[in-house]
Length: 205
Image (cartoon, rainbow, N blue to C red):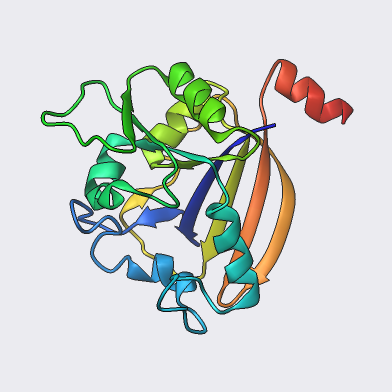
């Protein structure tokens, strides 16, 4: 069964980007160390796969997802990933209004959260759906539409920037399901324990 999984690199003080993030500079000024784990211990220049064993496993896990959900700002600031996030999987961009001209190809613009999740899960089949973008993540968490949160905890203190959670989402219960140490980082994965059916399944599993 497909799950919606948030993947995010976060500083020890809770930031996912430094100050002044924007187009072509999604990590902000001085935020590059947040993604340093992707090159720690060298990287394969052809596949961009980290050579560190644990970090490589997490990298492979992310690229095994069958669809991507992302907020419009994150999508645009990342240069639309050149139209292909990985392996040609469809990208569902959350936005209130479709840009003109719109990026086509693998990108699909969706305004309704539930519709975006349903379409992404259908497209992913038995693979998970990757989720990006702080504001969109918070919106989906509050709507009970996120299944798991995977955080790569980076041992730096940014002090200022964009926090992962500016507000407490409605679905705020988490259960740690994985904690593994990679080169210079700690990879954490949590199951989201929301109210209703999901919370009941988690308690009785």
